[in-house]
Image (cartoon, rainbow, N blue to C red; front, side, top):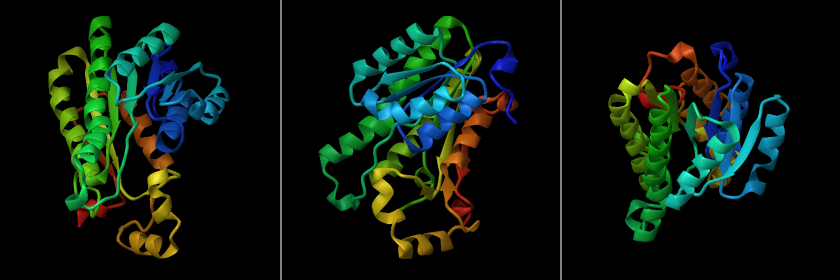
Length: 258
């Protein structure tokens, strides 16, 4: 069991982006159970209703925040809301993302920009904003970005997403070196084939033949779950991972080992 924020003697805060469902919601609940007060974001506040309700059941303070990674000013505004409401931010989980399924030869400039704006550019500036406030406050912290096994291995019709996620992995390695002197750790969690209600996966995860074929390629013969990801995030945010930085933890059931 990870050491909780309460056990550290401080009332710490975790900010999880893209938390309206799936991985983001699961990570927020896991961190709340570890003792963190929680800020969660989505592009629309009403999308956070179910997550906020689940978080309230943990007894922790919870603040919903509007965040659109396509809009640079939204990033600073979101952090300002978190700091005003909760006083600090110790852990950032970069989960907000956008995915398109399209062959590389058909990707348009607008689609390329839309994918990288959220998955890489927006994630970088959200990370920068977190780093700035931690350095200004002279506090250590932890930044965990949700990436993908597609940032490590190739996949059909996932070029823009995989390229962006590979970029986030390397961003975390670069900033882990830059910000180590401030006690700020940066790591990524890279799920493989995921069982989630994400709209981008509905057409595939509801197809029995596709699922059977996909699971057959995974050495552990099951999909990654949002609870698997949340458990990894909880660990990396904990004191047990205090010597881990600049790393990518692959949760792919052995898929990338071939």
